[in-house]
Image (cartoon, rainbow, N blue to C red; front, top):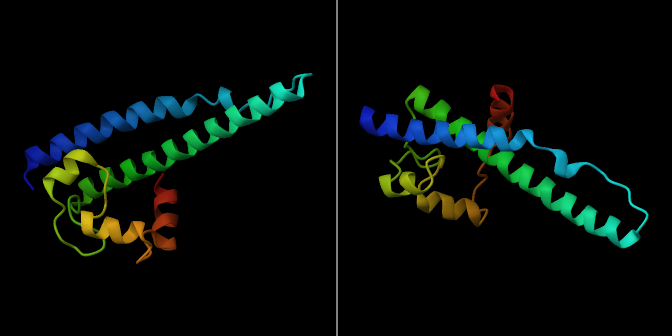
Length: 128
């Protein structure tokens, strides 16, 4: 992968990282609100659950983006972390934070191999 391509992916990842960081600061939607009406409380609880799931999804995406930026820094970006084959540019264009080629990602989605070893997750959390 050329330096120009790496710079392009790095810029895309940094822009997405900044976008997510701003969104994650807004946690007002998860505040517990009490109302005298039980139906309103149920509705607010449902909205809070949705907001929590969105925060969780965005936090996970932010960790993946930080991992991709770390791989750019250490020179392993664009190489599948499972089979060590090059990830196709078309896949990187679609999902620049991916760590697997399409074949390995499909296998991970089917739980055919452990996609995130516990040590890798712990290392990533320390780095975050």
